[in-house]
Image (tube, rainbow, N blue to C red):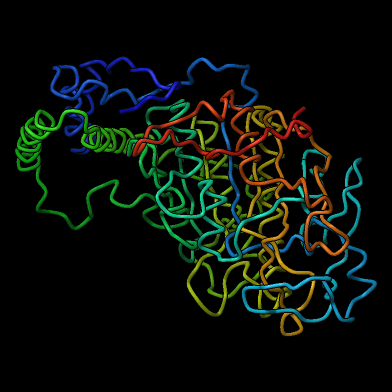
Length: 502
């Protein structure tokens, strides 16, 4: 049973709207009529209690309404992008000694390895950034860096889950699902939680990173494959489905409605049917709203130029190169802006996949320059554009942007040109939505190996707690009863990072 302090039943939609969906929703709207079961008392009491449509009263004033999570899959190197370490340059090529036994993923403990790129100061804050993220220097005064973040494991799958869900084992909801569950949606014609995977494939764990797990199913992430001919799979009937005719479809839906009535009446307290019906309702509404929201051709040339998008691009090559990486990420970031301004609550953008070798992700064991160069430059320009675009539209003030990855990389070389996994310290940054920009919270040591203050590191729970507070949610009270435990995004941990709140 749902015992959250954050959910209240919402009013049922009007009959006239459901009739409209039945007639114009491409068939799926007919299935939406099954929600009348709840109105007729055939669904279990409380089955609709996890159906918020707008934010509920919060214990304190929300500073933000929406979130963008930028996830660099494969483990982006903090010491090559954000966390400047002059000692690596000074000791480059010398034997690296941590002063303790170090157990790594591939035992890549080579010589001290200086970044292949130069660092330079940016903004009034003077933040030192690598040349491969130089475009973000234009918004350096908006960013709050966390350089003492620690993980729990050097295994990609577990570390990715930890950052995405707050747990390093499967079976827990993604952060976007928790935020959808807590605050609902501002636009019932679009999902509250949208996921844009890497165009080359999924990251470690795949859909487990954005699954709703034990939360009601309508809170799972909706996949949008930006650049694909069919960005949302199966939203419309296949072009060759001539066998689907209005009469046969209507008859099928009538049968389905009868089956749903029987199923619901026999399963008091089971909200899964309710969640399935809601997904069909949403799909029906999306048939009208999603094509317009995802249509980038409506944007002027100056916006395409800002994001680094090539209007002539039809397909991207398999190899990593800067223009194509910029175009790919640019389209995702611009799509994110269009979704955010239409009321989508949480947008998750992935860069990097888990499709083997040669690597097309941030897992740079073999050659940091080959992998991080194009990926970083391809990410930095569109992300900087997203920040500037949101700001000039007045949306940055209530939109949080979180840049993250599963862990960092070591200060020593692996095979001369690569870096092994470093779960002992890495970097996140945030901006917008109540974040105080131009600052740094926490430091890594002189090598970028571990936190400078090892007794007081920052953990993912703290980042999640901070984001929830800015959304007006007390992280200890956002709970869902599951298997006898009041589960929450931050588990039994989490302290708000007050130093980065404006």
